[in-house]
Length: 107
Image (cartoon, rainbow, N blue to C red; front, side):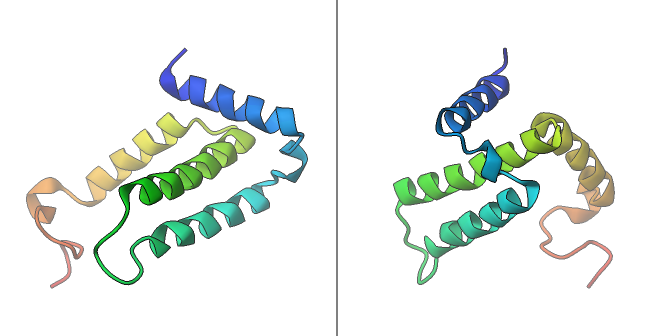
């Protein structure tokens, strides 16, 4: 069992112990990702100073809901991230994208 598999198994057990799966529709999980992402952003709202523990807790919430949504939809998180990385690597070749915050074909 990989670390990712162990995390998913722990999340499944946590949800089952509380009978929360009934509330975990794809729509509700997607909403929860957005809500938790806003709470993560709030950690940086007024200045560049932030509490690393707060950021870690909010990031964990975002990741938890992302993993729960992937699991609900039967998607392998490692596979979809790897596939997307390959697409993005092709879309933004390092030799023309390095050091740029804008797409390489825009001034």
